[in-house]
Structures are given as structure tokens and as C-alpha cells.
Image 1 (tube, rainbow, N blue to C red):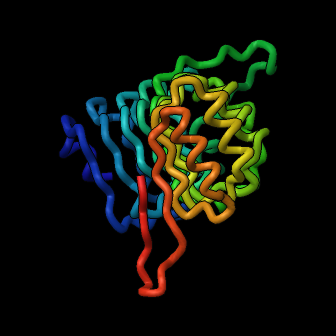
Image 2: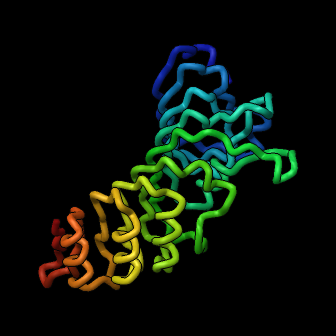
Length: 234
């Protein structure tokens, strides 16, 4: 790609409206590995099947399901990532899962710097828990968004608390979270400071009051009013 040699020192890159699939990327490889100072890559408004990522990345927003690994198979291009924004959990798994040709019992979990994970359309997923391939990447998370997640219950809440015990911000907006699931999440996440349950139609006011009683700031949306507007409360 002719653009890459012209921007060797770029630190932030936003790709708008790029449409690249696997077939045309064979002719025009999207290889960002030479951009060794690139820290911020936002490709959420583009369709890119595969991409080679530099290990300098700290922020990645993308719809990609699986990046191309650097030539050296021992390298982990996302080892320094602190923020990841994806559309679905499936995309998260494609980006973060541990790739290794070694037997499972000899795989060394990579160190993780990830602190923020936002999944903006989790309703498209069918996971009941997060796949084991990504769990070691998530233990330092502070900010988790699972917007629209289906079947959020006590099992999901306890799974999050076990895998990501340091969560301080949790966004379950547009999900079908129940009062019991929210209670389990609030009780299990000892460091939780903020909870977003906007447009969670299965929640009653008793669940909201319980969250407040625990000292957690909560954001929740009410049903549409007769005037067509919505009330958002804190």
C-alpha cells in the first residue's frame, strides 16, 4: 500500500468508508506493521476483512473479526492494547483469542494490558459465557460494555465477576438483564462504581433502588412517554 511509507511516524489513524475484503486484499495487502508508532486505530466505519497490526497499538475500534498476524508467529500484535471497541463478542474473540500451534497445556497466556472493552451490539451474539480463549486477556478490565446482550442472568454476572474482578463501570444497556442478574452483578463486583441499564425493559424500580443502596451510580431509561420522548435518570 503506497500510503504506509508516507506516514511512518503517525500515531492516530481513522479509516472512514474503506471497503476491503479478502479477495482484493490479496492484491492490496493492508499491512500496518511498519507503523511502529501507531497507537490509535479507528476502523469502525470501514469494512476490512483482515489487517496486519503493529504491536504499538493501545486503542483499536474495529469491525474486523480476525487480524493478520505479523510474520513472526511469536509476536502478539495486541499485547499493549488498553482499549478495544467492537460490534460483537464474536469480533472480540476473533481479535483476542490465543493463537498457538503448541498443545493446549503448553500455551503460555499472554500478558494483558486491556482495561476497556466495549461491545456495541452484543444482541447479535449467542454466547452464554465468554470463550476460554480470551479469558486471560480480560482479567485487568475496568470498563466493560455489553450493550444489548441476551440472556444476562446470575450465571453471566458471576462469570464476569470471576474473570474480571476489577470492573468499575458496567454497561448492560438495551439488554434483557433481570433484577436477579443485576443483584448478583452488584454484589459480586466489589469495585463497581457505575452501572448503565438504559432501556432494560425487564428491570423494575426495585432493582434500581437496590443498586443505589449499594452506593453504585446507576443510569436507567424509562419507557417512552406519550409525547414520544424518553426519560433518562441517574
